[in-house]
Picture 1 (cartoon, rainbow, N blue to C red):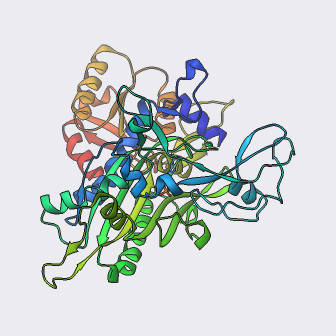
Picture 2: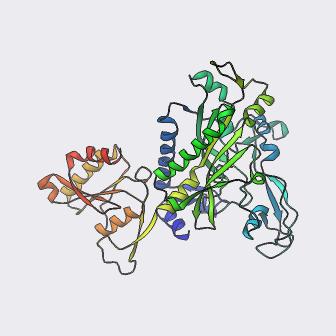
Picture 3: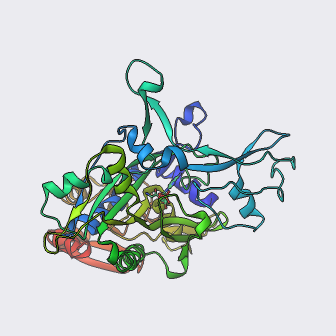
Length: 455
Ligand code: GAP
């Protein structure tokens, strides 16, 4: 994990937020490569979830919603983690995590009751006794307007899907969708986590990619199975290894307040083994019927063919962008014996980030083999053409071995070298990150060549 964190910082994937002030509790900034990488993950998700389907619509709702939304959703009442304090050193912990450490419970990722019995554990820091667990609400509060009192209280959204439920009727009226259909959204969510940590795995501000699929209650099980398959398939399509992912069903006592059935996709992390990456939940009619009750607006669906009227059940798929980034990085991290053609006795292992080409932050690097003016001019004109289509780096500093290494380390799938032979035959050399195969390609054909590669 140290290697991943160090690479992420050194190469500009992830920085600690407000670092010059000593950082700020579990908040992170994405650097030049991190923003490309996370955008690519979101693009890939949106493409598979919205653009290439006729039955899912996208929205982008606001982060701050009417406070009643969070009363109706049950979050004000039940969105809690069991918190314990050490009576000696005063440090705070999540009771379920302490129990998990001694193997008495699974990892309960939040929000369920009743609090657990922690009589079998002591403080992991100083061995002191612990207080009885009490529920700690994770919603982040803010105030809207000039007055800071109960009347101006609002919440930063704790999950993006609530913006989807409150727009269920709007989307239905504005489109020609019929059940079954889904609504998807990508956006920030906020939780006052008691024990954030493990780099970007658990943070207080994070991004979710959520899709709510509205179905006839009688068909919920069928669509639940369908969406489970889709979500696991998505991660594998983008290169996640089979033995790196697994499914885990939530036991009844660990399910969130809204869930009838809940399954997690877990990844095999270097910080304590299997951890939740994403979830698929059957939320029944919990959300629509609660919003109907609290808003007074009828949120039933009327089937125009059968005339049946009902609250649709919701099959939810929920993925975290930061967790996906972390899992893709860990999955792609590889160290190989030196292959860049440079003698490098000190560092005979080189890092290759084997990211899927659609997710890699930089797609192509243009590397002129000498800094002669004529060669640089040709390389820059090639870069100019390609950079209009793909995120393309231009690098003419250092030995070619070092430049290959720099690109392998950030997962660039193709490096393109230009030398004096290019003037004779009009061709450049394209080197594949994974196979190391080298193609001589006519400079005039590069766009068509890469179109095929990135299709
Ligand atoms: N709408 C359902 C929901 O929010 P969840 O299991 O609480 O379900 C879904 O969260 C996903 O959001 C998780 O699988 C994870 O990828 C991401 N996530 C949740 N809490 C997070 C946190 N504190 N930091 C980073 N990602 C988080």
